[in-house]
Image 1 (cartoon, rainbow, N blue to C red):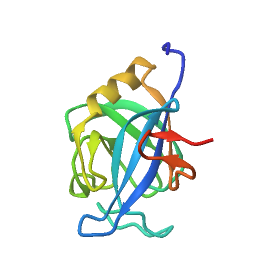
Image 2 (image 1 turned 135 degrees about the vertical axis):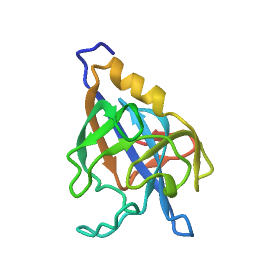
Image 3 (image 1 turned 30 degrees about the vertical axis):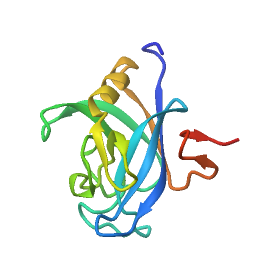
Image 4 (image 1 turned 45 degrees about the vertical axis):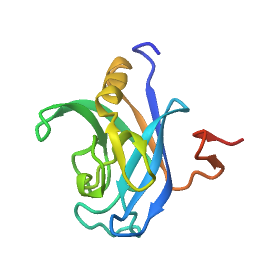
Amino acid sequence: MNKSDKIHLDVYRHTYNTESDRNIIGDLHIDNEFFCYTLEDEIRADGLKEYGVTAIKADIYEIEVTYSPKFKRDMILIKGVPNFSGVRLHGGNSSKDSLGCPLVAYQTDYKKIWRTSERVLTRLVQSAGGKGTIQIHNTPLSYDRISHKKKS
């Protein structure tokens, strides 16, 4: 990928946990290739948002690497999310770490995630010019969780 190419991320939400840590596990793909797992807060009905415990709406958003005053480092910002501000892709293990942001990591037991992929993902977006898009999908449609591939 050269600097003029725009990077595209897809998040396929697929495992909804309804126990005490109400969350959604998903797979993050970069330009149609599996990269890591995601964990987000639970989905609420359209128009309903509870601070710190609501997933962002499935949609297409612009992303950009910017400096985070909260985390004190460059991170991926998801721009233009209705009713949210400061949504970033970052590390964490459970919905308690999320506050509405998608968490990214290399390992999961489909209830939690670990081994953050945040810094590598940030560097990949930076190497592609620091900007791109992310599409959040609520249903993976035909999807093989074992191989991390979309089925035709």
